Length: 312
Image (tube, helix red, strand yellow):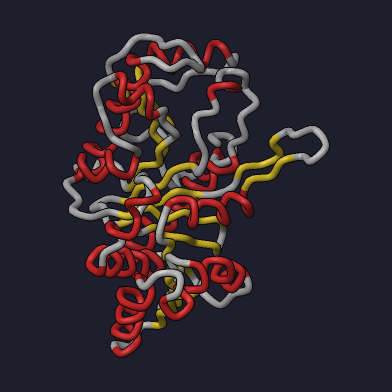
């Protein structure tokens, strides 16, 4: 990713900082025969903001790895909230390692909300112009209906509209995916879509917003891909993640080899800009120098776009 952005870094278009312990970053650099950037000075295009920590076993679950991952995120948040950085772009973290270190967050989104004091954040996944925000994420499927409340749905809808405007879309078109098959089929398959979603959509449309729904989950993403919407509000984790990853992740059908990983995770509702890759830690290939950087490049590009729009 650094090589990809080298021309912009050299011209001073932006500066890039890596956050991590010098011991851990140095171990990775040696294993891949790569140069280790120096500790950052203010005017340098690329450098390290160091944290405390020893070398960790590459590609293994560990409390030390989880502790350093937490401290790296916390340091990035602290510096960004202090105005030393315009955005934070996170690499994937291993939740088991995070928990072993005593930080029992279900994921990055919840961790970032706690670190920034955000009252109610939301996850958006993006693959190009294909964008999906989520009413719920890391909870059991059986708990979704009681967590998909009217206030929560309105909050996520507001955050989605706001994010689209930050991306330069003046009049966002947003669809809310139905919770139940066929949007409940008149109440035969559940009443949530009728009782909760329909009144929300009617209210937003009466106030001039281009909001649609509930749109059945088996067609709403097809319609967005066809250009009908700028984003979809999904009701739960897999409803929103599957279509984004189906489009963004590519596997060779003959060999099963990963050919490409595309997609960005954006946390909405934070006082700072945060983007991330849309894949996991891939411990099975860690330290081998074969991980694909396309999702990280996209995440940095999205962060640059969001910060530029906020500054405009």
